[in-house]
Length: 238
Length: 315
Image (cartoon, rainbow over all chains, first blue to last red; front, side):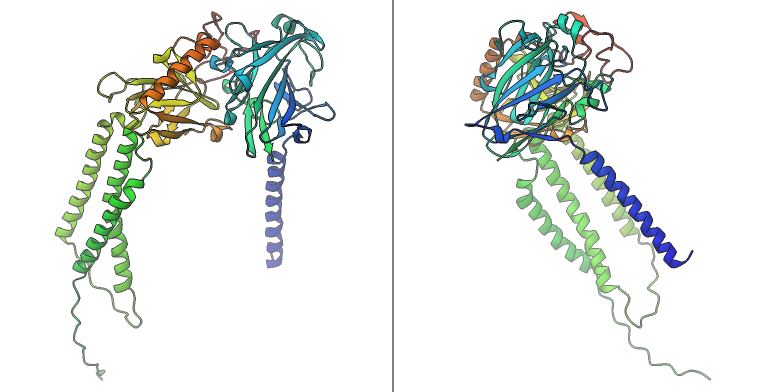
């Protein structure tokens, strides 16, 4: 092979490898779900954030993975993501709709509500949307071992926020669980709590502490380790 | 016909290279060791926050003292050879023949043996005297603090958060590690899922957190202040974010905090919700429900199997 042919071959091979590496990097690292920006909606140092957790994610390539969804504050559409942005030094009024059934916590200590305003949450169960099973209750512990009452948790360890998310009524859930994501009907819980964002910007990871990756080692693989399902980031902006 | 030869120049007397090297070495080695002991040692990590941290700082200083002269000798000999014995233009002669030297060989072997044996003895003593030097000693520790007035703290690892139980305070559990100054502490380290490693660096403590195993480590806090607790075993995607904070407080401040925390956990009901204190936990057993979840192969690993698919609580 002549020298020019060898050089051309080498350059083409190099470009192929570099291009492949760049594609993989963009596909796997840069392929994050969208960030739902709540910052423009903040008023008077308060912002409202709404999440839901589902027993499945039928709008993804992993339909049997449990999953959180984030509600778009403008359109109220449910977005398949776990990335959201809130302003710094702001009170976040969080609402989580729990459509998934109960699972005992591996460490029941996470049944305790920590880091919220008043170290408590408001919990209400619903037969379906608009049909409450009773009035909301303010609690500081949801004992997942006393009765199977916790579906998942919402934890931001960097802010010391640990919140067990109540599950729907078990009997109703076993009869009529939501099977299509994002859930818009079916038995669910509604949990409300507030916490303060820090006075500096940054990225705070959040995760579920129920090892709910069924079928994975220790229940901690799959959705537990994938952005867009049971873990994500809360971006605190200026 | 015989070639005419230039008259031989008189041989220049070789200087005593060994003495030169020794003198350079002894001066620099002394200076280095003085710098290490008086300048570097007080600032060496991990500091002097606990007995084990102090002993580790001392160990590093002593090893540096021993290593500096050896390292300097190698560098000085190397530099001296480069300056004095490098190839010179026009000099095509072979170097002088090398012969064995019993004295040098004996000194080399003897010196090396002394250094290695001294390091062995020093290391062994420094492991035993500070009660295991802050390392995890397994389930049956050999080296314990004198007396039994130590504070017991259980460290529980879980992807990706440490929590701490205090069996002497009703079995309360916290996410922040609080310790009193001047009281020996017994860490009982375990995990609920994969292998983690409990590493409060400034305390000079490091112990693996294995599921189903109680790994015991000791230390005695000597200074009040804040410290960071990190996981030091790659334990999943958020391993790098598995860290938290702790404080060493005065005895009275710790007592106030412990009583207040225990009372708060009693009032909130979380103390009743926790399982009875145990050195290890089987995450497949839910005592309060009176249910032992069935173990099914292929679902999870580590200490046991979890979440069987036929169980109604399957996520």
